[in-house]
Image (cartoon, rainbow, N blue to C red; front, side):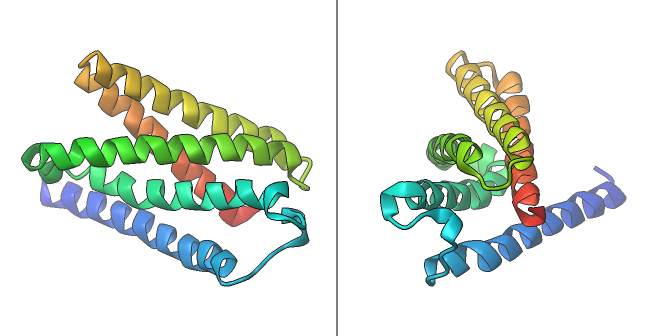
Length: 162
């Protein structure tokens, strides 16, 4: 990899991590410190359960994802990569399933189809990645995990703009 390519990749990851941190502090921390929109419902089991599941799963996926793409960690610490991958997949399923539910109850009616589609595609990509690794198809697994994280990150950008 040339130094220019390495610089571009480093800058791209810094932007991704920067946006992730911004989203985390602006949204997740605000919710955990007591911000409650009336859109979330009056009781925990109304919509707040789904929001909390979405925030927790999303936070885990958001910060484990970039570590999984770090080649040195993948190659040198294989057992860590496997455990972190299982955590990412579980968190991605929690995030995706809660997002599917939230897409049906969102007060933003025009947002519902795009949130639903993005959630289903992310769940599908993650399921395909899991299936590929169980069949020991490493190349396919890597491609689907990239798709899963890209779709996951697009949902973060979607949340930032809505």
